[in-house]
Image (cartoon, rainbow, N blue to C red; front, side, top):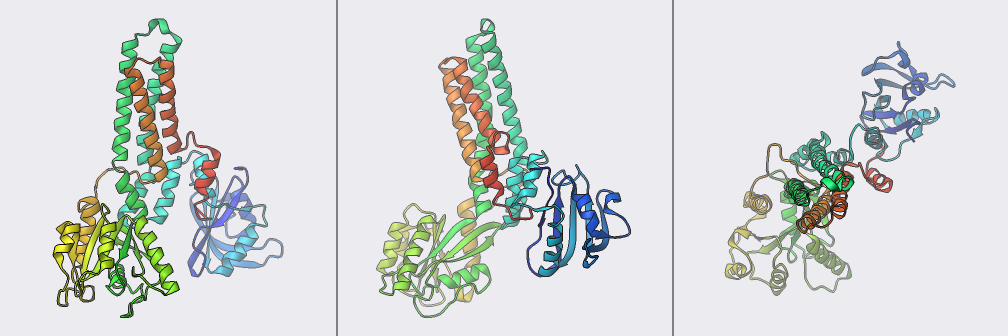
Length: 458
């Protein structure tokens, strides 16, 4: 319901400088006004102004909190409704006292993502922009933030609208020829459909070319650090994270579970997985950790195989290299500060020389070369810049692929002079699939699922 007023805390719960409580709805200003004591009534306040005062319980006059209140009147707000934002002291008690008072005023607690959902339902943003808000919040690198910010501003939406407009023109042409078949020239209509389908398919293909990079920027490269016990896996994670995230000892089997840590390398987010040393063991707990390590390896986008250059290759390591065939992988020859006893000729049988990185993690040598190798492996050493619109959302990628296939079917049907009322079905389906990206043809259940991923006050 958009007729009621909602409220939620928009800042993280806990201690802080300030906490912001957001209230939105057609009666937001009039419902908050009785609680606010200041030199001016909120009902008389101009839009986009900030006012100092006190939150007071209207029942007994108790002063609950000293606040700043911001007023934004419809339609000039994020939700396009009247919005009041109360900036209180950033403590759990102060926020709770204000929220409890608000919820006594016929204001209900907002559902997760409901403010953004109202912005979508009220036409302030489309669905792809709403989803980009999540990406903006969850960004793990400057580049990912920039990509999400462009999508929030409508860069992807504009591209989708342009493609759909071309399909609308195609559908209109088909409708005319269906209604007035006596004026239809079959060959000309088929050529028109093929031309327009090709034009839209080319636009879709340009977007899909960015999908792999966009998905990586959005979700990060899942990177499994694997190897036998005590080769320096945890030390490598700590070096990449620039922090002591994992316990490092000389005792084999110290790491017994998969440890996750996000890092950014050359503006590329990596989800590092420090795995338990892969070996045969009778220890029940360690055995569980080894099995989890194997699962992490299978699901990883990138494998960093750490070897001890001070020891000959072990049969477990040879088995791992056999299993890594065709996978994106780099080999770290660690402990190069010690005498080398590892036969590099064997490595060259499995890996390209550019995939082998000599390092001494304890001496902090070779880390820059590893970072360059990871960057080159996925982006040729650099990311695209400028006005490129990345498609990063898995849902968007799937719908673009479906729309492309529908248009491919329409093109082939036109090429075979299939009746145009049959071709119309594929063209309209592509139009609907593109519309689902921006929310024009999205089902209510899909909207509920998307907005449930938001935090409570967004």
